[in-house]
Length: 276
Image (tube, rainbow, N blue to C red):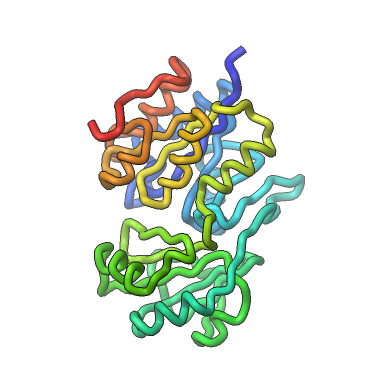
């Protein structure tokens, strides 16, 4: 019998295109891997509120789902889902550093409960059930993430901001549009998947992860470190491809579907060496 694999998939730029339609062939490839007995789950920067729909759309039934760049891990229970493991930190220093440099930006935090507090409207972010607050209220409680949206700034600006503000004391990721997402220090998709991997009792290196962003580098390193596989999408930045063990085709060309199908033929065999 083929050993059971833990398959952890990023959402944006991996499962779906920018218009939120599925990448070609992904639902069918996910179904084939699922039906072969492997555990298919999601590991995303999205909150649970914005992730559950993709669990349903892919028709997968994992026990655990990783959200908020590893700060939140959901667990399936009889009547729905529990927030099984949540990492939090005190956001006050981070917010002070950021608001000094980007006073006009909009800010959002996610509390341990999952509720969102925000200072202003944030396009493309799910704010259902959230509450608009002042900056002082925003930092009053421990949070699992801080999100900064500043449409007038691009990715290079955010990298400079992080360096200037000295945000090495927290983990951060820069989205494929103009936002900065900050998580507790030492927390990423890899730390959360490692916990899930242990809980499920899946054998050592039976791990396959795929993604396209800098927030996937942590899970790539974790998977490769235990002998698993890490696949970068074809459109990923060079540093993301360099961190992966393999590179597949662009998301628009069905790169994830191609990569998943290798699990059914030669599970441990890489497709393309990173950097090629």
